[in-house]
Image 1 (cartoon, rainbow, N blue to C red):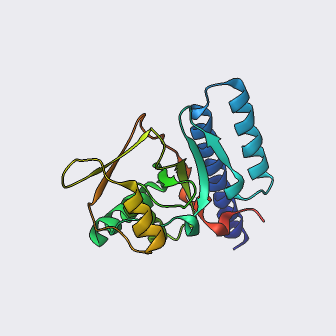
Image 2 (cartoon, rainbow, N blue to C red; image 1 turned 135 degrees about the horizontal axis):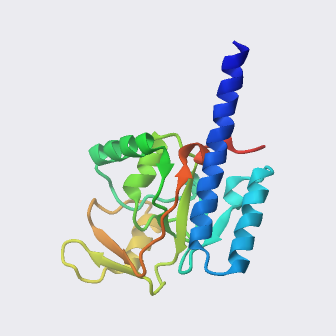
Length: 197
């Protein structure tokens, strides 16, 4: 019995260490200067000493990735429930979150990744890595799926923020230049229960 408790505790610690290692690997890969690497290592050290995940962020040479509470995110489009379930199953099997969700930094509107955000809820996650952007950012291009023409982002704000509605499924397409960064964060690290107190 005591051996089982010890082994479970060891596995939890090893999972936490793998999660931290994934954060370090993703963060250092995204750094372009020695100063940025030092900043990342300080953030990881603070996290290991008990600071909450939401206090951790790192800069990709072109983007800022931050760990945000899911409650901050605002769904912007309807989703396909079957696709959400399949995505949740795939992420659960991998046990790693690899694709940060691009969001509007001021409102939390999900630019791209509504299916992933819903899958995260099915997985019981409390935090997600997010790329912090603005719809006014020149790296963000929004077009209509139907016509390919530029989509008026004011319509997104009006619908999601003011009217508290979602756009229909497959309404907009978001393109990002350069491409968005990847992460490698163990799912356990994105649950509130695993956060150091």
